[in-house]
Amino acid sequence: MAAADLDALLREAAEAGASDIHVAVEVPPVLRVDGVLRRCALPPVGVGEPEAVLARLASPEQVERLRQHGEVDFSYSLPGVGRFRVAAYRQRGSISLAMRPIPWKVPELADLGAPEQVAALARRTSGLVLVTGRAGSGKSTTAAAMVDLINRERSAHVITLEDPVEFLHRHRCSIVNQREIGVDSAGFAQALRAAARSNPDVLAVGDLRDAETAALALTAAGTGQFVLAAVRQPDAVAALEYIVGLFPGEQQAQVSWQLAAVLEGAIGQVLVRRVDGRGRVAAFEVLLATPAVRTLVREGKRQQIPALVRAGARHGMRTLEASWLELCGRGICSPDVSPPFPPPERGAVRSSVGLGSAHEEGGAPGGLGLPGGMRHL
Image 1 (cartoon, rainbow, N blue to C red):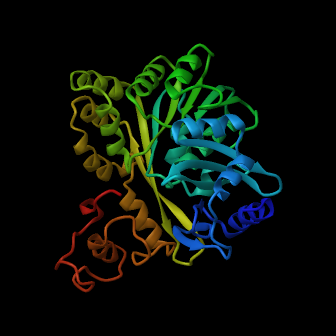
Image 2: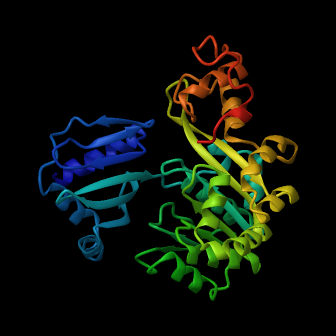
């Protein structure tokens, strides 16, 4: 792939609003637009071309890391177009690339449609807030918007730990230092240990991926820092279960106590297609660490938390399903367009937004009733 073709591909992706670009041999480059894969009108990528693309995008050190480990993540900027997060990896003897456009401007929480409780959580000055979601759910964007709110409103020293650095934050009211894993530090745990000696007020951790990183994050949250951490889990309860499950069985009770003590809240999200075809919109879950929630976390009864979330609307809590229903009720989304839960549960949503019963849709008579009966994505 020639340099001109690569630049044209990246421009096409940016103009189409693509969330991802895939480059693999023997197939034309593919864009993911509104969650759907679409082949570009380009020739199939030839053998050796991904290596040539990588040589242009990556530094020699990053190319060497791919050679040694089989994968590498980094960011790339194309002037006049934008920044891209790049994941390069070996497969069947060749290299494939996945590139994700990153806007120059950090979006505000209001631009994302985030409920006001998300901003309230970003304004906490200590404790732990989790941002959860599957890959491609937009959690990195939401976390960046929360850091931006802190940067605009507080005088704080913010350290972000990212793999790789995505949105670029200018120093405003806060000082924001952004460290890239693999470039500025060897790993999240090492970077967190170093951050503890750097007088931070806010730590934004791009991924709680192992027990050591999670332990350091919990310790930081318990000693006065505000820790904002992303977790690759579908919802808040799954994220809590995941964190506790990182540790050996004999440590899990202690970790549950520590987690209950520092937890301030969790934000889950999923992207769903708009009914008008103009891209996707986020549905948000909000879990707040009320005394009842803390008790369930501490006692290891985390599977009972969804019932508290459903009953906690007066505290500002909401489920993913409730957020989805609100979007459907406002005509932004439709139960017939990529619902964020399995097809058998769609009838309940249609009934809840006045679009017919589950029986009319071919589901079980009576359906599943209220959104509490639906499974989290």
